Image (cartoon, rainbow, N blue to C red; front, side):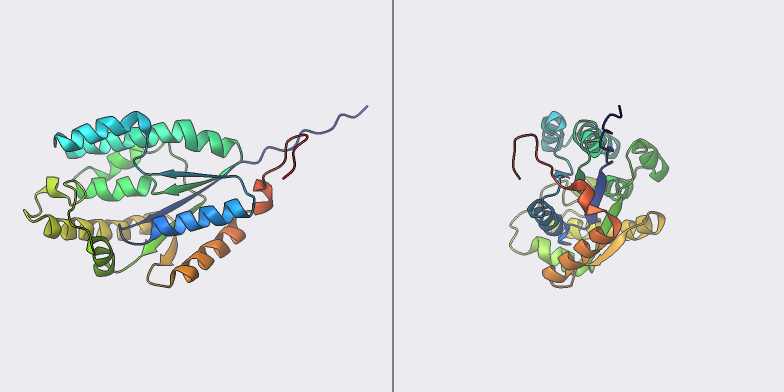
Length: 233
């Protein structure tokens, strides 16, 4: 007598967004998450520097200005590794579409600008799976800066790159810091594949373009939520 075949396990898909602060990537990834949820797909969202395990140490180090470029990099790598092992990898194995607001490329850009060796950074994150889709939000530097600085009364010390002594003025330091990150992103996405998003387009058009790419690159029906016995969807 033949037994029923077990359903084939579906490996999850990883989608990441990258770009300067002010590029609109966080808004767009959350819109993509909402769309996938409403369509009934298994989705999980994670964002940079959000591990509960590491957050307290990060805050303490920043507050006391104790972080060198290397320790700053290692703390963020620890944060990422914790989320990767506890959240990202298990959910990918469980057949989820995992959405990441920033991924290893953020470390490649920011930490190299802070002086960390690029080859060392790539080795540090070599355990991380490459995304199935990476969206890189391209926006002119002045546009991104205006979006961030508009209506913001103060900039945080590390956010402004004040630890790098670019300038004693936090706003000038922020502009220099972001400019260097902008240049580094340009180099990174010559090395790694990414879908370029014109972040100056209307939000609705950006989102439509992102959804079109997802539909083409991912077999979405594989990720539909299925009812358990006795449950209705």
